[in-house]
Image 1: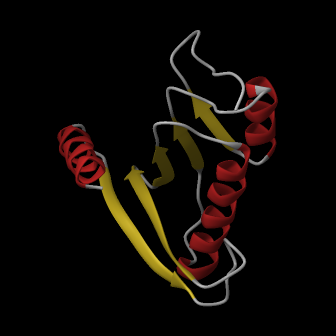
Image 2: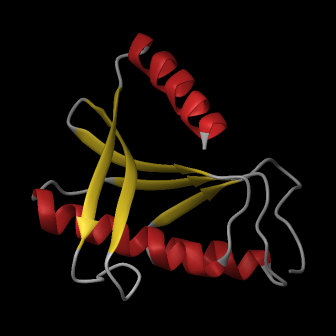
Length: 124
């Protein structure tokens, strides 16, 4: 967790120098909209020139993560009234037997997965 916070702080500093603002949105989902049970929800929100983006940076991503990111984006809009213009998931590895399907699934939900070229992942 400390490493993730340090990374987030570094990204925030870089983005600030280029005109972006980054905020951490924490919300208690009492009704279980995202996971089906009450839980704390966390999102990194990046804003520039009126464009609002959710950015998820993770070491690996699975099919279930895509669904959770999608639900978090919907919850954010529902709670704040602010529409999301773009959702990005940045990861070096897609942990799935069919990583190309995970990318297509994400695209259908409005999520763009960004991976290093040639490193989409393989079997679970």
